[in-house]
Image (cartoon, rainbow over all chains, first blue to last red; front, side):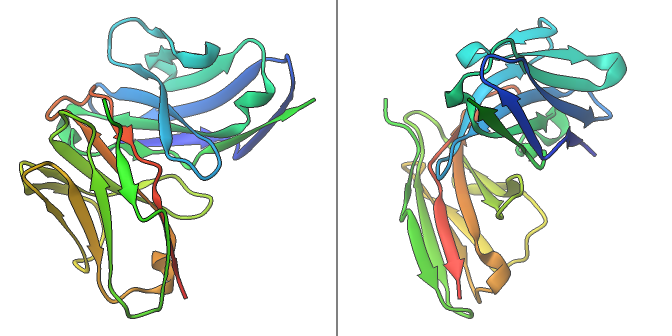
Length: 114
Length: 114
């Protein structure tokens, strides 16, 4: 079975500071990993995805994530936080064995301090 | 290219009633998935439809049912509503078969059961 764990339900950083949102996955087969963002009262938007090509994945809005198999991690980072980054972020996994469904983590709420 | 649209955006139902939620998939996408997102949690997979047939189901009781139409739009029906069914219901459309395929999400329907 596949699962993802997001460490920290709430992260607060100052504007301009580094953003680091943590995600660890569990999968018995090679996973496909995703980060989604959800703004208040909206649906989910894909930030980036790992599909077994490059381990460092660049996404939209300056975000990137690195797939580390040895650590079973897929942490999301952004060098400099902007006020508009305040949102809920979800790490998710999907595999060939269960291609029909995406399994989401419980989410991390990112707050940005002026 | 139109995105995923859901209707209605909000509704309030009484416990024991039935509800139907609707979703129009993104142009060209013949696979539709439904997710339930309870307050403060990540989305949970309900089921997926491909070519008008259910193609995978999560851990939800039979009172959650669905349909997909020839134009790939879809409905989610919930019978005998319970208070715990209060959630944001998200629809996602995608191309079939590939686990690395991006799923595009609608804005969701906020269901409140009183």
